[in-house]
Length: 322
Length: 279
Image 1: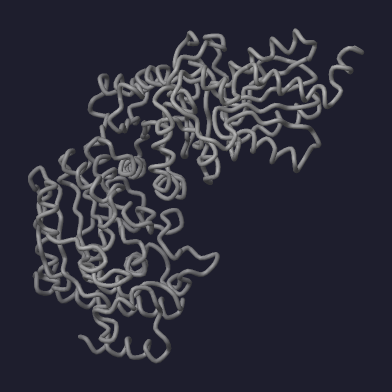
Image 2 (image 1 turned 90 degrees about the vertical axis):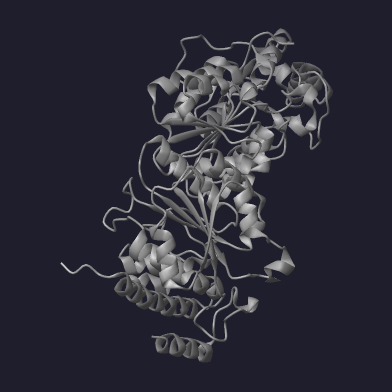
């Protein structure tokens, strides 16, 4: 297991801090508050916490309703239930009227591990990204989480924020606060291959970059924490300054980060892209790291994909000539 | 100042409801699309809410203390649009642009386009949850407004309605009133054939609601029940309003086929004639 902090824990802590500052925050929960970590807010501000029971559709609708009275609801459950069981409620009652509802969900991607497919959200980023008005993001660690939760409060309109069940290492300095939706973070410079990752995959990308550098491939790492709005300025820079791209997401490769990046490049740049993610398949029960390996999302898989891109595009040769 | 009697008020509202019905038929005829049956069955209830019950201010559509109304059966929006226009939230001329591209009056209601319209609806089953949220918002902010939600009888087939029903009771939302437009017809036919909902009163009582039953076309009964909701106990209120689909137009009454179709020229003339004669 990776050592670190699950981003859901950082979310729970951030909510408590924000609840003190922002009296208009209310929290909705569907009977998994100890898991989503909204239990901390419930304890601190019981009068602003509503446990809606195991009824996600009503929870989304109630959040839509309360937002029209001027309050700012944060709605928490597991990503798979929010994005699919209550998908149409999110689309029609929240996103269509552009209501100020924050859907902040845990257990993104394969991070629920041994719970299995029913609790793994591996299509949610694609689904949420296709809904107009929706901002869709997944922070890479606890530091980014804390800032993006506050930014979600400040942004007027619906936001889908996805967190992890399992711990993630701290990547960012504790005092980093300049995260902005739609603005990617370049974590490491490089001029041959760029690894564009989101959420828990950012750490895997950083690990892969170390290996790739050892192999003589200059590797850039981008934390694309927001897949909508997509940071097109960052993608332009990547296309101008590096030679090939690997996208990495803990989500199906259909419709998520990889698709978003490819859609942009297809219309603007000629640059080879390899997408890493679930290849149109469901996963299974297993430890998180075992699942990443079995389904091709581990740092080793990223290294292999990047090496192949380097060979196919003569990047090794170029690197050796420098 | 002349204080009007209950009877005078009822007469005034009856007249208003007739005007509302005429406008509903006109706008659906003009658009050659829309849902006359359910609009006409809800016409008396919605008219009374807008012209007597709701504490709203046409000059401040977003006034935070206003009463809220949600037409959860959003397809009946012609009745909503007519009442809002007649109250002055937008010009009456807009009614002739129902469902027209570039207009504000969408086929199903959009709160971002129509002033005074409190919630986007049209996907059945979602309006009561929004009402629960608004009523909770009032409680949290210690505001005294009430939230009224009009439900269709077919609509309560939706599971989300019952999730909302449970939660309204849990949070003791005595500021939430749901009204069932019980015309006993849904798109495919009679409610008891498509998906039986009886015993409806027992169901809502068992979910912790205070249940009342009225004739949804009897102005005095509607007024009496809505005027006596004040300072109720800890329960949300559910009003079963027995109605007639297509009420007021003889050839539309009690026929599922008039759920979502516009009258032709001859039918239009006949409908207006009947409604105007009904004084």
